Figure 1: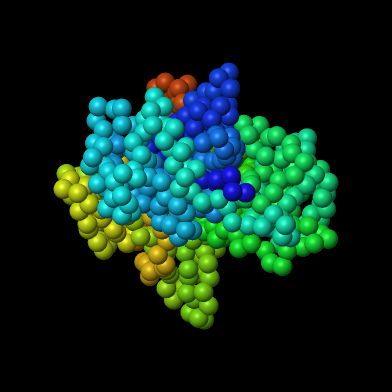
Figure 2 (figure 1 turned 30 degrees about the vertical axis):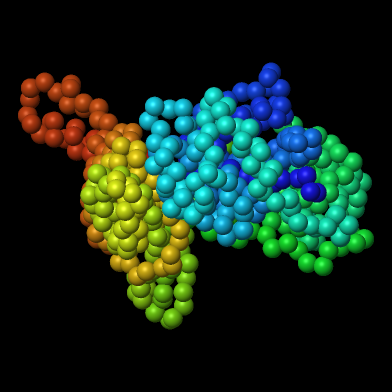
Amino acid sequence: MQNIRNFCIIAHIDHGKSTLADRLLEFTQTVSERELTNQVLDDMDLEREKGITIKSHAIQMDYELDGQRYVLNLIDTPGHVDFSYEVSRAIASCEGALLVVDATQGIQAQTISNLYLALNNDLEIIPVINKIDMDAAMVEDVKDQIVDLIGCDPDDILPVSAKTGMGVEAVLEAIVRRVHPPKGDPEAPLQALIFDSIFNPFRGIIAYFKVVNGRISTGDRVKFVNTGHEYAADEVGILRLNMEPRSSVSAGDVGYIISGIKTASEVKVGDTITHIDRPCSAAIAGFEDVKPMVFAGLYPVDADDYEDLRASLDKLKLNDASLSYEPESSLALGFGFRCGFLGLLHMEIIQERLYREFDMDVITTVPNVSYRVHTTKGDVVEVHNPSGLPGPTLIDHIEEPVIKAQIITKSEYLGAVMKLCIDKRGVMQNQVFLTADRVEVTFRMPLSDIVFDFYDKLKSISRGYASFDYYPDGYAPAKLVKLDILLNGEMVDALSSLIHVDYAYDFGRKMCEKLKELIPRQQFDIAIQAAIGAKVIARETVKAVRKDVTAKCYGGDITRKRKLLEKQKKGKKRMRQIGNVEVPQSAFLAVLKMD
């Protein structure tokens, strides 16, 4: 155990985590030259296309220093604010962390939030400045920023260029010398923490774990403490680029277990594995329960695919524990699921993964956040869906979730950033100049205003320089109304939304205009209305496709034309009574993308 080191890499998005991981794997010859590609740990096509890490990846390396052989377990982490739950799981499995900071951009918001996560778990922090080979690198300035942030010695900061491989050996040496070996007793009863799992169609569910105490061997009878299910360990092993079977995995190490589990609900991330004949006294304190921020309905395009969608979500939840879902039904869309996501990017990724990995085409409803409704009877109801809102006479007041947003930007963009936050109903709480031209502002803002386009707007007004991180900060009273969309007087519940009273009129008008463009013309007029309660606040009409019935009338009395037009009008009216309006999938998607 003295020769094992478990560490992770934490950084803001795009600061070079995956590239540094590539160099470490190349340097320790864990990956052969033939297998080496850019972003070798990002094994999803989606990760390579978008250039972001979505999943934490674990891999084991061998490294020799002063004649001693060391085993290094690296867990690569995502950098985007929507995947901070993945980061918290990786941190819980490690004793040390490489804090990577881009020499051209300096410290960003997500760097700070991930650093606090690591410090709370008592991890040894090794600061690394990356991209020092670039012309725009400000190595000394960034060093000062890191010293201010964590109070370390400037000589402890390692300058690295992950692209060229410069300084990578010093990083490996620092990991061995500075990170302490895992604590634990190989002879104690088995205690192993599950930090991830994947579904394999041939072998069932494969769980990844870190052994805290004891030893697990092939053929052992084990049980999962929280679910109480018992299994035989058909195969255990360690995680290299591919899984490598071993006869046993002991305390301090990271590995995997295959035991022929077929049901997804039997494996929970954060559960503890122990032996049946010699169980541990208590389960390991797992990770905090994830709090979904954004809720949206997912419905199969074809109603017969409902059970397939449930199975797909089950398998996806194994690999992404931050996804939560429950069944719901809608008048317009039939049966589906109400899903909770950590943010809009997370929602987009889940949708894309359902399509790519499980061939599931889904319709997504307008995303919203969960509100607390205080009724006149004194009850508190959690509402995730506009259709779950009690009647207006039963509501005393509504509270909406509030977040604390930390934004770090260059001082020249400060005015524009503050205007954006204030437009989104934010209240400024703090402003700190980190250096002469970098400022950190803290705002308390409603989550519902951030969900849609806040991040995109922030990036565009700051030319990509502002970084943003947030965490929940309770609830606050809000003046909210339910905005309904009516097609021919019938409500489409999938397009309903809960919205702040100040935005309702604009949003309703824009929605009607958008739907007018997207709903194809029918044989009868379609009235599209936005309404709050019984009051219609906006209306558009999709005109009917009409045959020119008066074409055969040439000359004669006007009453002949009138008679034909009246006959047509009656037919259209009859059609309208029996006809129904199909809302195309593009209309639901367009509502999501409305600015």
